[in-house]
Structures are given as C-alpha cells and as structure tokens.
Image (cartoon, protein in one colour):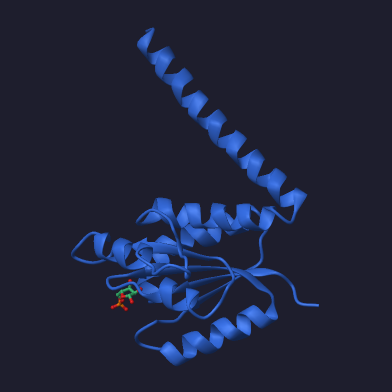
Length: 168
Ligand code: RP5
C-alpha cells in the first residue's frame, strides 16, 4: 500500500526561501512530504510525469508555488484531480500580483485553492494541506485544532504584554 504524502512543487529554487515555510509547517504536523523544483514552462514534460507518478505513489495534496506568470498550480490541476493549493510568489517586479492572478483565475472545473501572496500564503498552504488530510484523520484534525489554540494563546499573551506596558 502507498504511503500518503504531500507534494510541494516550486517553479524554481528561487522560490525555496518562501516555500521553506510550507515545509516547516508540514513538519510541525508530522506530514510526510516530497519537495521538488519543476516548472510548467521550462520542464513541462517532467512536471507532467512527476504529477502522474506522485499520484500513483500516494500523493494526496499538491502544493504548487511559482512567481511571475505562475502557471505551475494551474498546469498541475489540469493533470490531477487531487486538491491543488497554489502559492503566488512575490519575487518579480509586480510584487506577486501577476502570480496571484495567474494562480487564482482558473477556468471552471479545474480549481486551484489559492492562498495569499508570499510567506503567509506558504504557511497557510501547509495548514490547508493539514486540514484537508485531517478530514480523514482524527489525530491530524486534533493537531490542527491544537495549533490554532497555541496561536490564539500567543495573541492573548501579546495583548497581556501590551496592557501591562500601557499600565506602567
Ligand atoms: C517562476 O519564475 C518560478 O516559480 C520563479 O518564481 C520565477 C523566477 O524563476 P528563476 O528565474 O528565479 O529561476 O517560474
């Protein structure tokens, strides 16, 4: 039987500094993943072959990051019916607005779940993958809830620190 995993694809190694956040988030949840540099434009045949092979080997969710024309997520969504999460990368002269529109504006019937531009989006891609996989795993769903609680407590601690400072 194949082991379920998440595939994190990026159009270039120049996307890795942002996409490291996705990998770190998947690690927090203990989700097995593969990370790969492959491009919709520069290596289309290799991208197609990888997606087909990954799906057969148990990939449950694809996370795809690209900047500029950013067609990677859409190209992957055209190959697989697994959920595809798109991360627009802000490494071009248009601050990621180009990548955002290229990633989000998919034709009907071939969705890409597009997250925010840049690092927040990369983090949310990891969380969203965990939430998707959590539908079939009570343990993972509980881990996502626990992370939410930790994040709420961090905000409360920040507020408490602010109130203490204001009271001085
Ligand atoms: C996109 O072009 C990549 O995802 C990257 O964001 C951008 C620039 O790639 P490099 O020229 O840095 O390799 O396909």
